[in-house]
Length: 101
Ligand code: HEC
Image 1 (cartoon, rainbow, N blue to C red):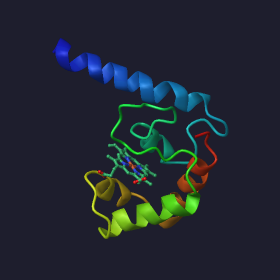
Image 2 (image 1 turned 90 degrees about the vertical axis):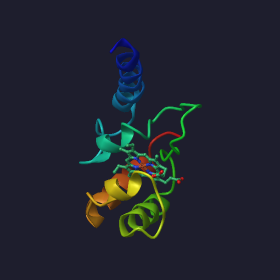
Image 3 (image 1 turned 90 degrees about the horizontal axis):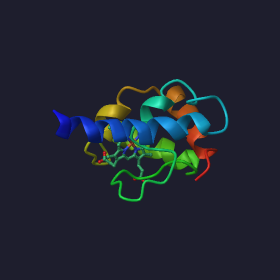
């Protein structure tokens, strides 16, 4: 129990805190807060998850469409991308693009 709980708490702290401090609407457009749980807005140097804050919106949109269609292989993003419509992806990508890198 204790062995599992601590890393979970640390992760929740790392991803939850800085998201609130970012510019713009807290948490961004609908759905964006489900991304920052993994794609933390702050630098986590030992993370295997690529950073997307500050990336070009068009790049994020392209990735999401390819994950969704299965054209681009992924471990988790394919399943996640299927839950988002094109307008939702556009809004989320635009928000990530203006977040500080
Ligand atoms: C469960 C954790 C998790 C969540 C939630 C998540 N991602 Fe990802 N994301 C990943 C991982 C891991 C990868 C690497 C590809 C893979 O293995 O699926 C990735 C890759 C990406 C990439 C490609 C970046 C690159 O340079 O290769 C983009 C863009 C991206 N995610 C956008 C999003 C968006 C937008 C959301 C919210 C709708 C989101 N992700 C939610 C874990 C997550």
